Image 1 (cartoon, rainbow, N blue to C red):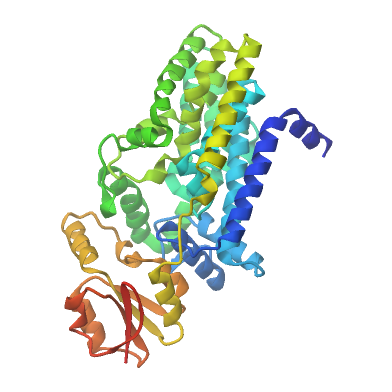
Image 2 (image 1 turned 90 degrees about the horizontal axis):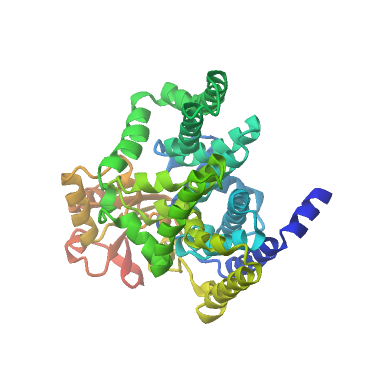
Length: 486
């Protein structure tokens, strides 16, 4: 306890900031318990809830095994919900995510402290990271990305502690699967570099490779078990569709320019992102001149290879950029390290930048007013349907049906593409059987073969082609959706 107090006292700048960050956003989440939004939030909430109810560690979606993803994230949120019956799930799970995000910021500080060795400088990197729109969004919604970042940073920081680093690696792997092994590959290349530059001998290299292999093998047991139970279906859905296809094709409408992830940096940081090129150059120069150790360079540029890899992939999704936000926050401010010896000027510049950032984000255009979901018509209709319906059939709007058929013809769908519909959150808020209908033929078949008198349909008010198949009355309307039933 004394050690913790001394550490907080020594690093009081970042401790104060993270305390305020936690309090402000906790209050925001508690005061604004908006419904889970589409997509990932409602999916992880629903899957987690089903896993707890079924007492299984295999992710489930409406009773079907979801083989795309590892179990950690939905299981975590399911456990949070069951452990906090006194709180709304929309509040408890988001606060849990916020606390994880603060922990990720602490790890970010620890990592870059080893490079910068200065409290104000490293605190500035943490503030820039925490105020980026991607990090803020991921800090307040259910997601897997924060688990991945914690796993990566923790593994690098605690690599020398076998079991601690393994726990962190499991966070990364069992949240994001194969991508989670990223730090194992980076560390392998790092020790190979040390061997080639004669910093370590063959015996030491083999010792490190052995450690890396054992870490990999222990976590790979889950994959073996899943293959034993699910066979080729697991291999196809988990490896081919969820990994290979995402790299080689823009699946499920996730299109974007080749420079998508580079452009994302400009959106996040504006013109200041150009300073990262100078920061990168200074780091390389200092390493070549032996002013930085190769380990410090490893810590400083740990996530750069991930950024480069993303630019080669075909699937473009903004939250894939979440892990490299702290990387570029560091690179942008690193040129300030050149004036560290001019202590007064350096301190004044850092304090002015931090003050300006806090004023901009919390006073001029407060980020506390940014929300990522609201009580939308599809949420309201799903909740109302609980009073009238045992089965709910949601007809995807014409534009969505056309998009689905186009993606299908281009082979850009995967096994689970039909599961989500246009509003997967409706499944969480409707307590019965819910089906998304992607064609008018499916609608006609459902209408002709209703399994219960309490079978209901949800149709967009302008979808006249779909309405002609129903001989039912409108029970409830929440523009633009209409709830039909007998």
